[in-house]
Image (cartoon, rainbow, N blue to C red; front, side, top):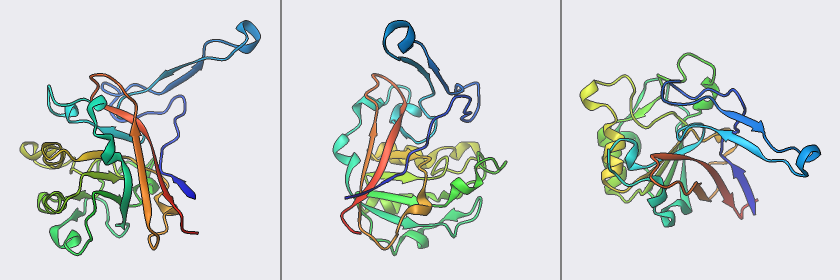
Length: 217
C-alpha cells in the first residue's frame, strides 16, 4: 500500500489566522528523561490550525461538535480533482463541476500551498459558487477536502459570508481545510481517504491527520 500524507506539520511559533481567535502554536517539553525518566510535552494549538476539520458548531451556536462527526464518512474511496488552474479569487462555477463524477468523498487540489507566506494566502484563495456547491451536495458528496483556507470567499458580501459552509453543514457534509502536499498526488490513480479528527467534546473543530492511500504503484 502506498500512503500519501496530506497533513500540515506543526511547529512552535506557527501562526494560524487572526491571533485574537487562533493561538500561536506552542510545543514545549515539560517532563525530561534526565529529571524524571521520561519526556512529556505541552501542546498548544487552535481548533482550526493547520490541516483541520470543521464541525457545524464552528458557525452554528449549538450545532453538532467535532466529537459527533460521522466517522463512516471520513474513511473510504475518494475522488481527487486537479483544480490547480484556478487563480486567486477565481470562482469554481457550476460548469466546472458538472462534468465531474461526484463521490461521497471529494478532494480538491488548488495548489494553494505555493502561496504560503504570500499576502494573498489568508484572503484571496479560489472558492466555490453556491451553485457549484449545491450540485456537489445534490449528487451525494458527504466530505470535501480542500488545500485552501476555506471553500467560501472571504471577500464576499457580509450577508453571504460562509454560505458554502452553512450549506455543507445543513446537509451533513464534513469540511476539511488546509490539506498539504497536493503536488504529490497522481491524479490518474484511484485513491482512498482517511481524515480523522481528535475526539474533543463540545469543540467546533480539530486538527486532523489526512492521508490518501492506494494499492496502485
